Length: 251
Image (cartoon, rainbow, N blue to C red):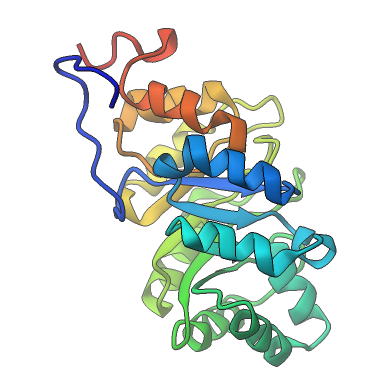
């Protein structure tokens, strides 16, 4: 840090298991990645190449190597996994991970229906090769999943071998654990946490107000995801009480 301020919340050093910041890259250029890493690499724990962007991104191998050179694990968005599965190309997906030396992957069913047992089987198979994250929740705003189902799915997927479960919100933060307005479904979150340990969950929270809500209730070291590249530094200041929205949280 550039200077000393007393009594700020302690943040674990990377690589860490809690207080993760997962960033979504939706199409940065190589030069933008270099600029991003020079400023925010220290505060980024995971990098997701959003949805299916990796299919159309130029110089994909070089981009992934840039992130890896900064010791930031890269994984493809869950939608890409689903695009392979729905076409019966799971083995091709495994080869893709190997080709690009991907160490993490996301298993999701937000865009297509996958039976829970089948999803857990994919997790189990992938966990033999890579670190698996799974996403719970639908991208369909009309599909409301009751809390007991969220809990059951998360528990089953953790048991199947995932490292972290991701609570769905999309990049807009307006589905899943959030209402269409972006408001947190607080009852759902609180009920999930009665059964699922907080450190095993990454909460997708792309909006500042959502980040503030989680930090206020669960502290500086809550896991947050779908953070825009230009919001990593602002989020870190929220985590340690150096922004107006969280100024009084840790005094």
